[in-house]
Length: 272
Image 1 (cartoon, rainbow, N blue to C red):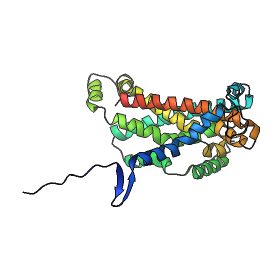
Image 2: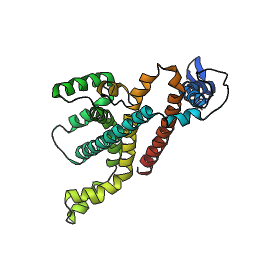
Image 3: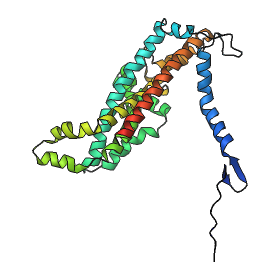
Image 4: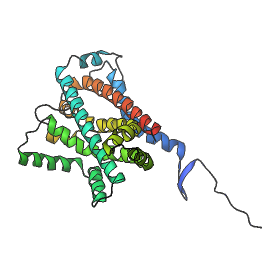
């Protein structure tokens, strides 16, 4: 009679003698990922004008000064405008690409999908230089519009992949039934497909918005006289006296980003 030896579960990972304890490994990983964010939040309430311990006290003054800084608010407004335009364009293009790839048969279908996903593997610095040269050749001056166009390119893969995962699960028989009953394809698109993928569309838009709002490399090449918030933030870091206010603004934006991410994930999981 042979006995089957079951693998013994232990609190360690690894191969052979090179095992790591799970608990300390996870704790180290979490600390590496989130300790800088925790420190950022702590210093945003610090009464110190420098980033140092021990803290002299707690204050909300830096948050109040955020709303008294017109240049900072203008940069945040620029980022909001750029992210809104880029997210809308990327979501619309991603929806069109997803629908074309999954519902139609034509030559170059795989190539279209590969081109839509290509910006994921292209370094943003290289893409920024390429777009900078392209806009120069076309005689298009650098502005918020050029930043929005660049950001729509890098947000397109995220929107496309999110929408692909939803549309691939839709039963094509629903569309066939609508058209069998006399509806045209635009009517079927408006009355059947869009309501079914609506929450995923919002999720894709929010994800593209976050990608655009936080991006700095591309914006650095394409922004004109109106910098986006990440570009403005990077330029202001050399002034030590402004760092506490910038940290407070960064914490506010990070909180908003986390909330948007949670909403996007919630919508995506509910609609699948």
